[in-house]
Length: 571
Image 1 (tube, rainbow, N blue to C red):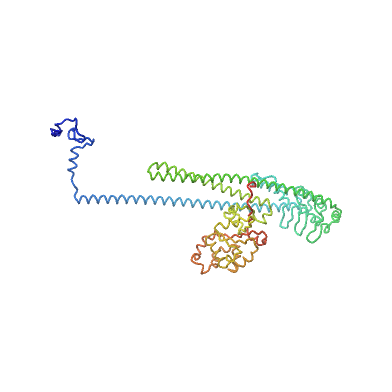
Image 2 (cartoon, one colour):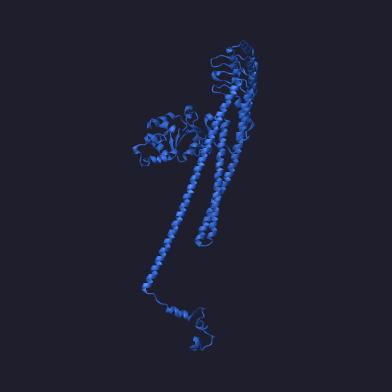
């Protein structure tokens, strides 16, 4: 049995050896200290101080609690004030940013409007200058002032080179020159015709050498030879005959040059002239004209092919960047998922957050690249369409030719503002058989002209109102049949003035539009203000697969011919 420890002097423990003590027993550690086998040490002073701490009265506890409450209130108030201040600063920054963005937008719009205005002024100046040049050439040709004619044409060509910065093909330049040599006045008289009327032999020779048409027809069907014979210019008649003027041509009253010749010498020359020589000269002129036409067609064809090559390259770039953007979006989603996992786990949050920001920056850059590539591709396709119109003059009469793949750019986006600038609604000649399918799958109010249900008065009126109300196209599908007049009558049954107002766009006014409304239309049609807000987005499209429409009807529309997509080898 272990001995009972005795307290000695100084508070130390004595009476037993340290060896063989149990783990929980106390050991002496020095003055005023106790230790246990568990390694925890305490002092008697600490225990005494703990036991002798004064207890708070209820009043003191209440005061301490009140202090804590007021402190928390004060702290919360200061936090709210700081948050309000921060919010006010952020709102001020947002307002400033919005103001700067608005000012920048207004400035851009003003600059754009100024550029358009300056462009219009430049075009008007060039038009007036061109009219002045033509007047000078015609008057100088009549007066036999060859130097003035040459100087005016040279000045026009120099101006053209300056405008194009020298980037103009010789074939195109030759056509521009020929256009001045064969320019016409209000009576369709050319410089050669004026020179013939004035007996200006020097100018006649130069004009013929530079491609002027010796058989150009002016007012009342009069040719240069006719006018020279009528004016009695013998030498002029001879020069014209030698350059291919046809003495057999009859004017509107049925007379030939020999019938109205005032000089007997001219009459004798015309009657004695060998027609076989004229036939040979006309054949040569025809061959030269065909050569120039073929040369120009080849030039335009190569130009179109060059644009098509650019389109192919642009499509490859666009598709590549589009794939990169898709991959970037997928990578961003992965980074967001990883970040969410780290937030839940409470580790590596800063690292994953930075990776999310990096992925977002990459997506933003690629989105801008894709948008730039898309715009470039659209502009190239627009350039191709314009070039094809130049290549085929019939396109001006039959409309703009596009493929089904270009329908979105032309109809919906109106790249280049061609439809907007033309001012007429588009009429779509669907030669591909696919345009109607495309249009049905976009958000439009579609009306089948052969459907009795669609052509009911109230339903047709509501289809028009709905298209205007929600700012979308009203599509009238004629189904390839000649039912235009039936459709016109149906619109007139609704309101006598409606069809003409729809075609000339006068319907898009508050006055006429208000007359189209009816009391039973419902609440969604009550607010004219909402109509007015979206009225600018309203469009009217006519769709048909027939190409034998009345030309007078076609003249009222911006005609678009949709052809089947060309094979990739042709693009």
